[in-house]
Image (cartoon, rainbow, N blue to C red; front, side, top):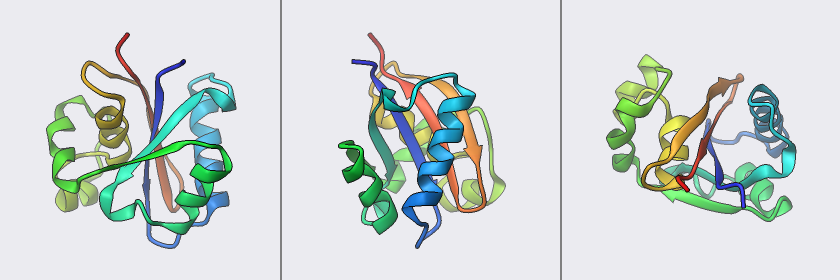
Length: 128
C-alpha cells in the first residue's frame, strides 16, 4: 500500500471531470502514477458533493470527511495559503490540511496544492 491520500477542496457543484482533471495534474506534478491514491479527503461539509462521490466510487476510493473545525490543527503543516480559505476555515489550504488529517499522525505533505478554477488538490503520505 502506498499510503497516499489526496486532499480535495472544491466549490459546490463541481463536476467529477473537473475534480479528476485536478487530481491528474497533481499526481503528474508529484511524478506519481494514477492508481497510487488510497483515499480522498475533504471538508465534512463537502463530502456529499455529487462530483466527488462519483469520483470516489469510480476509482473505488474511500472518501474521508474531515470536520471543518479539525482543519485548523494542520495550519502549520500547510505549504500554501489562500487568504479567502484561511478566513473561512482557519487554515491556508483545505486540500493540504484534509490530506494530512486523513493520512494520519506523522503524515507528510508530498505535493502542495494545485489549484484549478473550481478545485484544489494536494497529496500526503502516511507515516510508515
